[in-house]
Image (cartoon, rainbow, N blue to C red; front, side):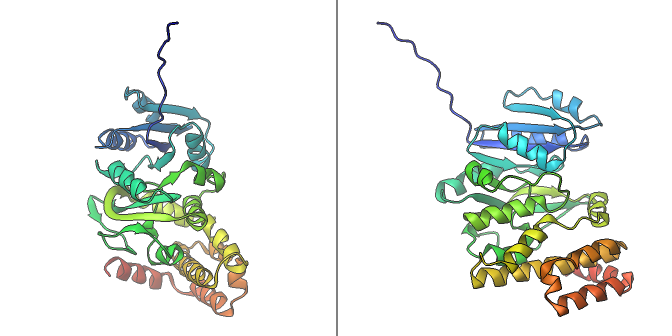
Length: 318
């Protein structure tokens, strides 16, 4: 009998998921930064979330067979990321925002982390921030030589949210699906919610090596502060802190992270006159249970805006 040899499909090591909505100025740069990776075993899944600019035409110029483009009606970044994961084929999903970029060694660094720490559910690397043509490092909870498990991730997040973001995160597909994916319809903090939830359920591994660039668009950041919706992960932390699922140590660290995040966010809201959002923050259980925190928010609500402008200037130059 004669036998035929059939090709066996082997999925790529990484699926790179890029949500896209009206980023015609940046999407070409983002895709090129992935195509320039030294580690080449990947696919790119770009989900065009109903863009109305020239983004779709720019996508069509890329003919690399590793690129898969999905077009859908506008449903929000969470829905775009979720469908990107569902349509991907790799065990490990690396996320990249359409207005950010990677250095050529990004996936190679992630691959090394996965090999050395195979039991983690989420991996991340360090990044730089680009703003007005200048580059700088954000506040960091580890140094550039750190490489390994982040044992106290609530505490680590409290010392610097730069630990992981939507352009440095890489998740194990199973861990991501177990956490339920990104909450659809949420505009703010949906990504941090997922990172915290996976890290809490599994383990988080981080490398202090700078592998990505986050493009800080001033207009984009201000629009987030004007948005009356409070970051979604505040509610998640609020439930954890006020519930019974955490150890005393984790509850204390989560509590400190939430308090710090609430105060910083409230100050930002006050700076732009978004008093409604500050009132929304006061509805959190942790605020209701603490006369001190309630008083702090009341002070922020009434304090002059110039005070917070001055504090922001000090913080930038610290």
